[in-house]
Image 1 (spheres, rainbow, N blue to C red):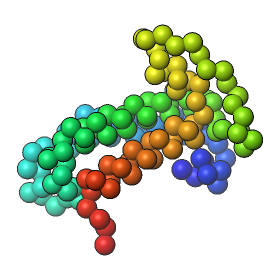
Image 2 (cartoon, helix red, strand yellow):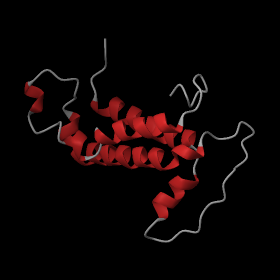
Image 3 (cartoon, rainbow, N blue to C red):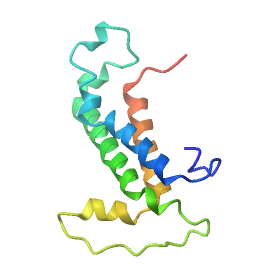
Image 4 (cartoon, rainbow, N blue to C red):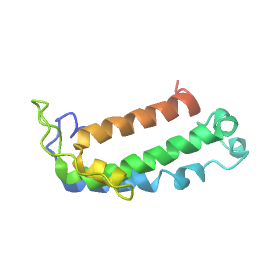
Length: 130
């Protein structure tokens, strides 16, 4: 987040490393942390995880997809401050559409989507902190 806010200098290797960490905790790795009745132990999880399992699972998968996107786009850097696009969008084919889109995106654009996914999941499925 600090690199996206331009508080720290941009480091593509750090973006890749952090994207891999996020990816390792998303998708199935995330949903596997919440087996049925796991509220028996101390947790910040709300019971809505299990009553809205499909939505929770979709957000976990989206997080994994966006983390993969960050990893793919790391060398693109941040959007230029003038808002102009620096890369031409690639021609799409069904097999590589998503990866091609990520390869053409600036990191801050993907990071914004990833942060919204985290926020959405926490808002719906995590108990509020006091």
